[in-house]
Image (cartoon, rainbow, N blue to C red; front, top):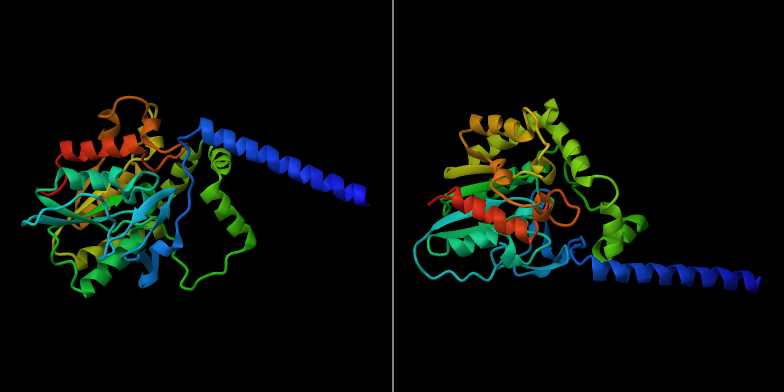
Length: 320
């Protein structure tokens, strides 16, 4: 019996050592891999109904990169604004506009603030997991608190997965042991992320999954409702900028009536300015996959944030 237990323990240790060696190898030879996960101390639950927000004066790690939040609950960067009158712009977005996976000063939002330091003050309310339902609740909450008046423009950076029907749970759900283990590996293991993202074409899978909501009547009714709620609570200029995903930037991609085309129709109904960034692919040289994080069809890499901020500046998409 002791011999059997010894063999079992020996094999377990051997497997763990092999996995540790592979993990180390992946970290050494694939340094472009970014672990995932969000520190919960960055979040303030149920700030706007069931929608969370960034917690004021907090700091933590998101996708392995340090994130700091200022006293007003906006994402912080190192750009120092000199005291002078400048136009104020409010950014809404999800994890892409938040800039997960890159240093805080490298996100396109931070780069825009640095470029327009003398003329614009940009507040970034973006948070991982946000979607059109959250944008509507936040706008309504800020309007009720009379916090939208200072802004000359509100910009929604809309990713294809922002048009969803799913609602957040109203109450906290106890995490299962399995989900806690998965969260640990997503946040700490390069090997896990490499294995999860290197099988199949994740970018295409995500695109085709998210695209269905643009042809679903219930989802489109919800989109219409949320945009109407946003419209009713905003008096300043509103702009919606539709971001492309990696799958849509491939050379062989062609599709009529894209999700962005559908979004354009709904934003036009409420007289929002709308810009489809499909030209971003044509104006960007080199391998388009380099614009995104490793095996990630949504989140920009450092190169992607740099190129996208240049695209926005060159096309003069922000209020001047």
